Length: 231
Image (tube, rainbow, N blue to C red; front, side, top):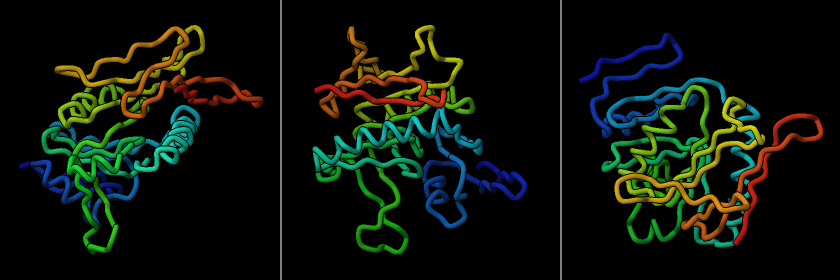
């Protein structure tokens, strides 16, 4: 069993040996209320770095704003962002993705279970157990390996149908000023990238739409984004 880990007054990680141990801690009052702390393939991954405003925060807001419109159109689905914990025993993972898309069908068929608060209040849920329909991760300097390697493998093992990976850090922008945006669908043994069409659109089987994510500079010279949607 792992020994307790203490980072001064900022973070105390108790002795945790299994996914179940971690999930109990994550839903307890002693779990930190800031930072991102995930359990991936038997390891606890802690990221206390502040979120970059223009390469992460505004980008996530734009993706959510566009997807919310689709959610409202389709009605029987939900969009969550930040501090929404998803856990999977087959995936050996418990994480708080940047964006989570969940359908009523996933709930009604029992593909996922909504975990209640400790008080058991009606419609009070704090965790999604099982594979939601779609997850979006946005890469930060402190999470490159996790977002591009460890989490995709865990999400695939968890049975999540679709995974989006976005990287808008300046060092990854190509010569045409384009950010890195890739939709992944399930293959036989791992996620496979969706085909990028001539106009730059990629198909989402989950949302039944095609998407292209554009980065540009606004009138003040700051990064801005548009998630284009096509039926």
